[in-house]
Image 1 (cartoon, rainbow, N blue to C red):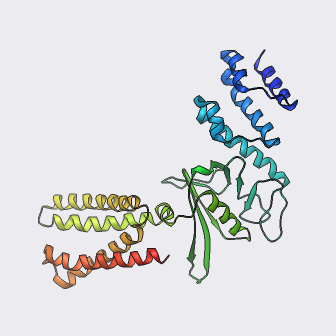
Image 2: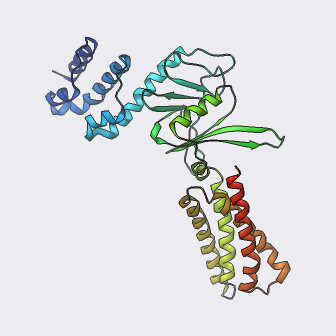
Image 3: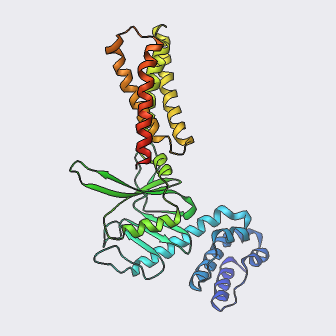
Length: 323
């Protein structure tokens, strides 16, 4: 029996209500076609189980086939996405909100009435699909893929934040961080709160995780660079030009790395304290020259910069707990 016959027979037996085991078929099939038919057999069984409301979790699938865990995870997501996209054809638009699905899928449209940018939450498969809205992590600007799928457990954080624009209007957004990128969802329709509640059930809102993932981290690294540069230049102020330059560069790199590590190790708790503390130190450092000129000594620098740093840390701590 060739691979096509095996697959047709497997599908027919599931349709007749006599589901065979994939394990038995894989054991009986010739070794040269086992890898070829495995993914198709799994997709067929997933489809029939979805129709009969007998879904298996990803962990249950992986327990059945422990040597194919990565392949099963991809099949699991692709199957969920296949169901989600097929349901898009049966979406009912709602005038005052996002579209609602006929099935258990939750569909959030960025722009009501448009299927271009959307988020599809599939509770049965414990999966989320982002359409034209997931930005990959990359040093260079990268366009969002048409679809990006991930499991619930791959969502790192989901936090709501509010920013005030130049016209003093407040804009609320939901920032979703995944293992490979992030999604920013602006509050544009009435289902925004419902979307937020959905993500709270997936991953509790965590300000610390949000801060670590936020765009403010480069600012912390930038301030750390400035502080490290000034500190390196001061320590080598009596050396040659080459030593001074080397010390300043090493201090700048070290300051950026240390500041970033401090925020990561503190899981975000040190974000505002470190940011405001370094701001105070920079301001204090700028005040040294008008006060003492170039006649700088360590006690004089300590007298000015340390209180500035402590004051900044205190302001940062108040800012953190007053969010």
